[in-house]
Length: 197
Image: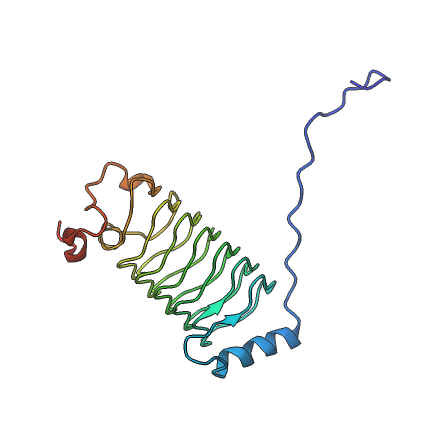
């Protein structure tokens, strides 16, 4: 109550998430140039650390070895892109589309991947240590040898026992409820590699 005897709310006001604006055409064009011309010498990374490029369309581009660490890449379209050995360390990738992309040995350490789509993506050997997958879609994704240590996968969609058996998990990996109590082979075991029941 305030001094006038009126009841006042003690609830804190919720902060609104800022609206994501469309990417300006000149920035979109620059990103397309980077992804269509081989810019790097063998073994060197393109440094796009901390990039703020939400809603960018990077579909089909060759961005292998790119360092997007700590970037804001919400709603970015990476469909059919080559992202082999790309770093997404601590990136915000909510609602990003990686469908049919080459993500082999990509790093998603501590990345936010809520509602991201990885349908039919090649993710073999990727590192998702402490990644927050939220409701990410992994339908038909190839995750053999992917490191899911401490990843929060509690709400992922499209994940099968066969996929999970081919990945590397630990007791700290948070799995969806349908996998709790399942007999999933231990990480790195030959059972998981053969996908036998």
